[in-house]
View (spheres, helix red, strand yellow):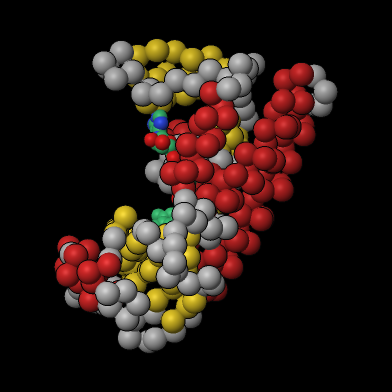
Length: 248
Ligand SMILES: Cc1cc2nc3c(=O)[nH]c(=O)nc-3n(C[C@H](O)[C@H](O)[C@H](O)COP(=O)(O)OP(=O)(O)OC[C@H]3O[C@@H](n4cnc5c(N)ncnc54)[C@H](O)[C@@H]3O)c2cc1C
């Protein structure tokens, strides 16, 4: 549940680069896709603005919350966006002083989840009040004031700070024909139970072996229908769990 996302992504990229069966190309933007009888044809644009065509037996849209793939296959993103904004502050070099558990401070004036993170990090989430601007709350003075109950401002080392509006949305279907949606492209959740990227990893674990079996001829393509059947109810259950925390 708790990990430092840049470290995890580096480790995954490192692992992928060692696989001879995987070609990884960065810097291309998907523009359009069309499914023809036995494949998907995708048009991608490189950084010089040139268009290229890619032909694949299957396509996975793991292109995040604003997914172009989701829009191109006409999938609705149902659910709600919370009117509240929250300030997330990640602080580093807390090896000796970080807490060893997750605490939810149910202060009605400013509810505050507070948790440790790997590598000597610690995270706080502060709800913004109506009328408070993100610029105001993200300022170093304001963060020092909010964190003063825990950290002396002189010792405060901020690694990341950002104001987010949380979303709780899920697609009606995680696949259409030869196109699949995975990760935030298929579902997004408030972060309160730490199941955002984790749900995306589960999508990958569920889909990857099924695609491999179909491509090698070990299983019929109908097995791919079970991706949506198995993953969507679980992703929705995690969103509902995070929503129930958000309701406090
Ligand atoms: C404040 C905060 C705290 C969080 N905490 C946690 C936590 O504790 N635990 C947890 O599990 N999750 C957490 N998450 C959620 C997690 O960060 C996301 O769920 C995760 O990054 C989603 O991964 P993804 O690969 O699906 O999408 P993304 O990380 O959004 O990646 C999508 C990729 O697709 C690319 N892309 C988009 N459009 C195109 C296009 N047209 N062509 C080509 N490429 C494209 C983008 O450039 C990007 O590289 C948190 C999120 C936030 C905001």
